[in-house]
Length: 255
Image (cartoon, rainbow, N blue to C red; front, side):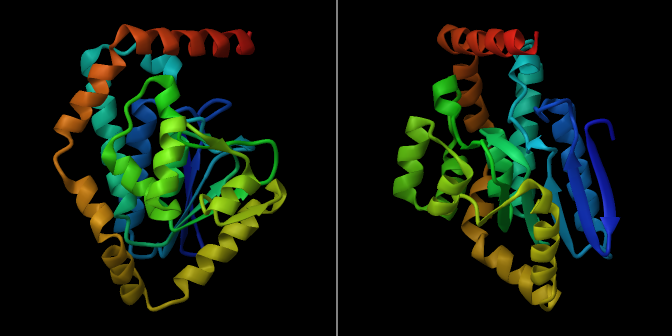
């Protein structure tokens, strides 16, 4: 694995995002995460999973610098892979805790929303879904995932405004479940995952899938039309212009 690190410790599968400074996601990283999830689901010795990033960044979301260079076929592959990854994580039967170790906008927030419990590091970090200001269409399935945790009205407003939240703000609206200092986040995640794995496994997992049945059904639908809509907007000159401005700003900061 080039873009993630994994280990199994005391029956817990640790999936740590590890790509560059900000863990920005491109196609190969998405594919590695999906492979790790498949391994964790299949391994009968694994009782739960902790998904985490690195200091200051859980993941900054999609790697716009790389994705901007993709051709049409590569972009279709990416979006198919990303939506399939979200569907896979939504339907992951074992307990999942996200240790949100820093910034987690857009695609990073989507991954965190798939988990059963979210612990965020305190600090000057942001989390939320800001796709619309970037010019990316939000699929209905992502709205359903967001509203599953914070309610439809707030999800609707937040999505259309591309609203981002500081950790304590996210805690207040139910976007995250706990806020702790960065140096405590791994211990807090381990404590929580152990509390979830103490129950009779089959009843817990079956109940999780039952309670998520509508979400799972939504992500199980044919996503061709969704991907077509996202791609149509992706190639619009207005969207390309917005992304180019963002990329120029990111590149300027790096230099």
